[in-house]
Image (cartoon, rainbow, N blue to C red):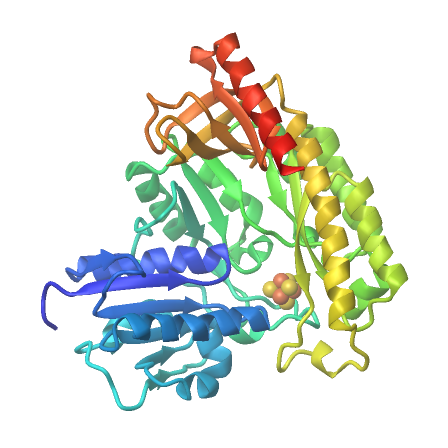
Length: 455
Ligand code: SF4
């Protein structure tokens, strides 16, 4: 292959996809490619796709067209979940040169001899392995200061609405020492925070090492300052995780536990592994043991059998439990899933209205949670600038923080921030050592003005 080529990458979907794109782009960097922005000209564009909803599919198709409008010569490779489940549909989109399913997507570079446009796309769709795996690369090509660390892939749960087991295959775990090796390299490369990712990470199982063993092993890495657990199935955890959070500052007090519905009838139809009372008592235990914990969830509205009463139960648990916020998804049929054959559909306008109601509850809960930290100090990792002296970042417990006196700060610094207000979806504060009452008052006034203006 020629030298001096440029490659761009785009990731749809989950954190696991982000982790994988970081690993794939590392292989391009090692082959002397210049990594460039998706909006700039590139010789090769790799799109790591997602198929969790119809919208995700549509966004992927739109991106292919956008890239080609900018430069018709760019070699387009679409890899990942959408390629795995809908290669035939993707083949019909003009301009795609390579389609790779989930098994081989990490090796995308091996399937490109020269980035020359092809009359027909090459399709690579191999059976997904069930064996434990290793990953040679280290995912350092990241747009964020948080490094996503893949420990697991696939899922055996077969929830009735979910296409992921078809897109990602059956559960398999990464070798324990291989996880340790990448985590050590990420820490040595300067990443202060690692986020554990996978499809169903709580089912990690490699030679009698389970998920909690991975957490404990990562907590031992001296250079690592923060360890975060990404989305995890509620039924795969025990309260030991809360005990670890309570005793170890490195383990972020934050869990994203997909509930999907507050109704037991819907949970049963979804084939979830818990009922609403079990979920509620688990998170109540967490909130009692770790008072500052951020508990977030996913909720689906408009599941085919969801009645008004079922939906009300989702609202009640969102409102009354320690849940802080929810990602809300409008149900959409995914080909091949059990739910796609269930009779009865909730009208789109009802789904939209249910989504709006839950979204409002979630926003109020989040705002109330953020306000609990006014007058308190949060440890924040600086991620991006938002003006000459303002930094944005997340606290240990995943509060989005705006730091107003950040002129001396750098990206990827962990700082103690005194929170003095909440506005525009941020907890706003100043770096603790520079705390200055007049400045805090001035910031507060600005926020109050913003709030008045937006009413
Ligand atoms: S646990 Fe259920 S929702 Fe999650 S990936 Fe597996 S089948 Fe899908």
